[in-house]
Amino acid sequence: MARRVEPRTKRPSRLHPSSGTGRARTIYALVQGVARGTMRSLRLWGAPMTSSFNVQSATGYEQLMGRWSRQLAPPFIDFAGIADGERVLDVGCGTGSLTFALPHAADLSEITAIDFSPVFVEAAIKANTDPRIKIQQADACALPFADASFDRALALLVLHFVPEAGKAVAEMRRVTRPGGVVAAVVWDHLGGMPGMRMVLDTAAMLDENAEQIRSRYCFQPMMRPGEMMQSFAAHGLEKVEQTSLMIRMDYQSFEDFWQPIAAGEGPLGKYVGSLDQGLRAKVDAAVRAAYEAGQPDGPRSFAAVAWACRGTVPEA
Image (cartoon, rainbow, N blue to C red; front, top):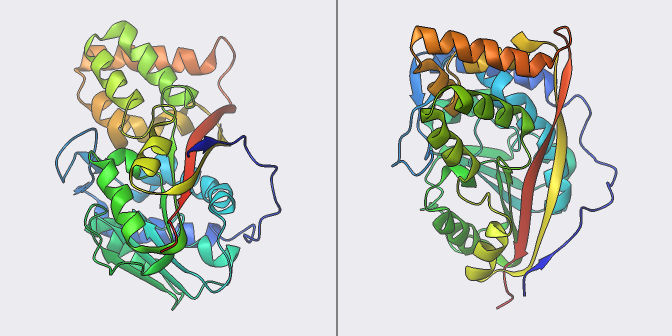
């Protein structure tokens, strides 16, 4: 029976406080070299295998999402509950936010990471210095591993990009041993991402086409309340628990907030980049006014809430 749990009392993390800094710089350089002008292959908003998630630059990708996914990784690892000696699968590893955090949280025997995008797989492989970590290109809905290969299968901010997300949950369950854990986390775009909602709500007042973009953004797969719990239970997982994880997205200025979107990064950047010059100028000005909220430009902090869910594979 699926049950909802309240957020846990925060436990001390074993993650090294500076574990992401140097590696992030390495990833910037690597992705800058392989990703400029390419299209990231992702399942986006119900699209087929490939999508138009543009990777314009490593710095832009980092500003848009990389810095926040690294911040979300430690509380997600605490929720998933890894232990020394385990074999862990990272489904949809991207540039390695979760992959490279895992060794700092426990003395794992093996970490396997997969992503559908060859651009990010290449960058993550080049950034990796840990012999326990193996990274390869693969499909979350057709994992190339034998049954019961891992102690845990984790997915950080990926299931909402998979149109048939239930297939990915089923595959994660299949490759996890009896008694092992499947866990995933996705942003709550509707109620938990006020910074991004500010952009879309503002744009929707100026452009009727933005209303459809907003609807798609707010209701990507696994984002409705209880949706992941229902999917986990439907695919045979037991002791299903759901909670909310929160971080703060701290921006130094409007430029810090808006630059990656204005440059075309991600789904919001794709929308902004499609606007004609006149409408684009109106949207830019209106979003700036919403960010500043009647005060001088400067630092702003937005809460960001994600749905996290985990379940146990039944014992044989």
